[in-house]
Image 1: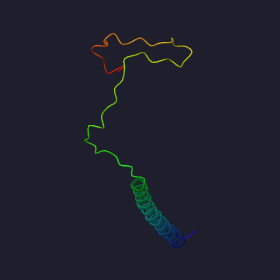
Image 2: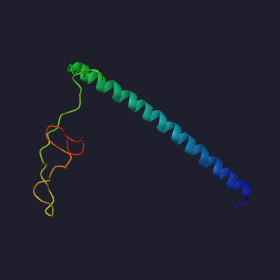
Image 3: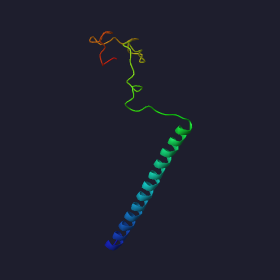
Image 4: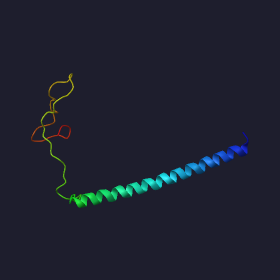
Length: 95
């Protein structure tokens, strides 16, 4: 293969790749905008609103220090609490 033929093939492949990437970028941008507008329109039509991120309605869920049941046949039916954990002062490992 001659150098000139190789250069023409590579330039054509590069141009094709550039066109494909630009077209897919345009399509993905359009799809993102369409879906964003559609979700907003549907939620507004159904009067579904979310609280602000700094609202007291959004907080970390509370957990109890009860042992969690085991699903593995080789482990015991219950998992003992960490020695550091007490119900009065729960630890972060199990609670």
